[in-house]
Picture 1 (cartoon, rainbow, N blue to C red):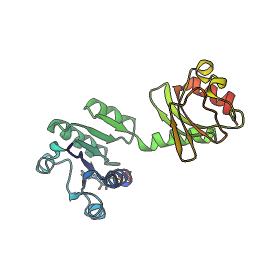
Picture 2: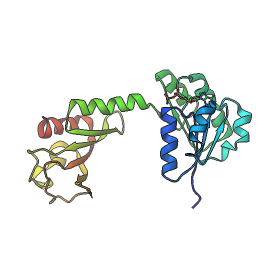
Picture 3: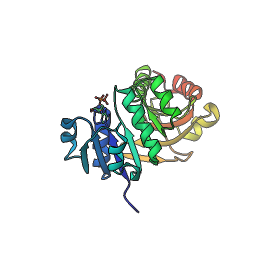
Picture 4: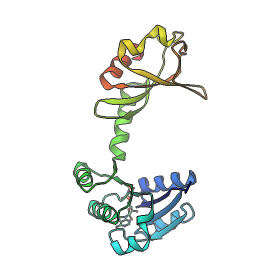
Length: 221
Ligand code: ADP
C-alpha cells in the first residue's frame, strides 16, 4: 500500500506538534510555513520543509498540494490566511483537509467552505481538563456527539472485587465498559465474569447523563 502523504501548513505550537508526531510515526510530511526560521526548525524533522505563503494559489499548485492525501492547516491567529488557504485547497481538490479554528466565527466559515475536519485544540483540551478537575476519577474524556462520550474512569474501592455481571452496569446505567486498562495490559471487550480491581481504568462509552450518574453514584469521590 502506498504510504500516506501529509502536508502541514503553519508550524506554530499546534502545527509543529502535528508535524513532529506524524514524522515520528514514519509518515511522509511536507512542512510549510511563511517564516523561514520555523521552516529551518522542521527541516530535519519532516520529509521536506519549504518556505511558502499558503494564500498564494500558484505556490500551492507548484508544490503539488493536490496530490497529498491529507493537508492540515494550522495557521494560528491569521484567520483570513487560514480561511483563504482552506478555500484554495478545497478548490484544488485536496482529498482531506483538517483546519485549526481559533474561534466560533472562524469555525463557522470553515464549515461553510467545506473543511473536512475542524479542530479547536484549546477548547477541546479545556473541556478534557475541566472533566478531570471536576472528578479525580476521570482521566480522559472524548466527546463523540453533543450527548455521548467515551470516558476513562478509575475504579475505586466500591467496584473492587466485583465482576461486571454483579455490577450490572449496562442494565443499571445504560453504559458499556468497552475495555479495561490494568497495569500494562488492556482487556478489550471484557467478559461479564471479569473482576474489577481498584485502580483499573475503565473505558466507558455512553450518553453523558448516564456516565455522570455512574460517576456520581459508583465512583464519585
Ligand atoms: P499556534 O497558536 O499553534 O502556536 P501560531 O500562530 O504561533 O500558532 O503559528 C502559526 C504559524 O502559521 C506561524 O508559524 C506562521 O508563520 C504560519 N503562517 C501564518 N500565515 C501563513 C501563511 N500565509 N502561509 C504559511 N504559513 C503561515
